Length: 342
Image (cartoon, rainbow, N blue to C red; front, side, top):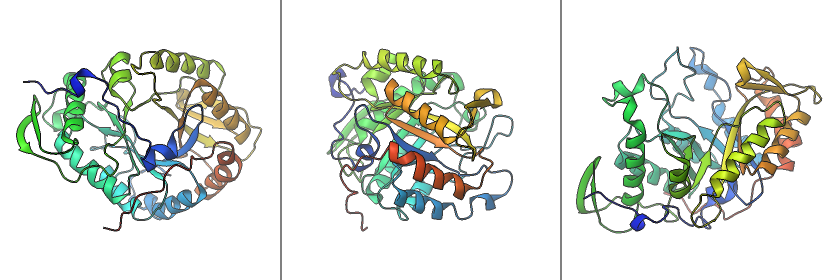
């Protein structure tokens, strides 16, 4: 028998006591996070030397989140190598070096791993970090990875939905009985359980699903921002967010996130200029502040910024963001991280 969630009811939870979720999200407000790595891998692991020290600084400065990507195989023809380390292992390492910042995946590929392994890793990291994990999830977009796992790229949407259902059910309290295309068992349970009862699942882009499915089953939505150098992009994004939120069954808060790769220049008045076919935005801080204000008005609750393309030193960019931008979009106090003295 196919397993179900809550007899077809929305699969979202109340995250009022979740430290990571509450630090990032509140109605009608936008917070800031940073994507790792702070510099791209270009053939030498030394580019990551000292990065954890910077993450400690980012934590102290009050940013809402740091984000890591899930890239099992580096395909030079497709793009970058992500942050290189396995995301759950690396976020566990960073959890031990930080106190408050939310630890986010952007995004864990739910089609390439078994949901039982994903649940075990996620619940472990959640406990080790004191409830700071926010799990961005996706169906995967690098075709070379699917045959490496013995999977069909064309079936990723269906497998993604099955994995989300399995993941959610195995996280529930007590022994479970699961009969899914991805596996079956009865009378046993996964340990540990999440520290606050559930882990937020933030769906990335469509992940092969309809807007109705995302509105019903996701705890939040991460989408691309449209054009960021003109006001038309934020207006398009506002329409997209508004249409999605109208589909949410209970009308409750489902946060929206977006991201941008920045080349933040030292001239604060430098206009917003698209680079690399619009993939990167070169701008001064005034243009960035204007963009973030437009996103907030559009209904975006969190902006994940990547500074890998910035030509200035990492120290200068982070300092300017912390001193000149972050005060306008502060992180939410929320509950403190739970006791994690394991």
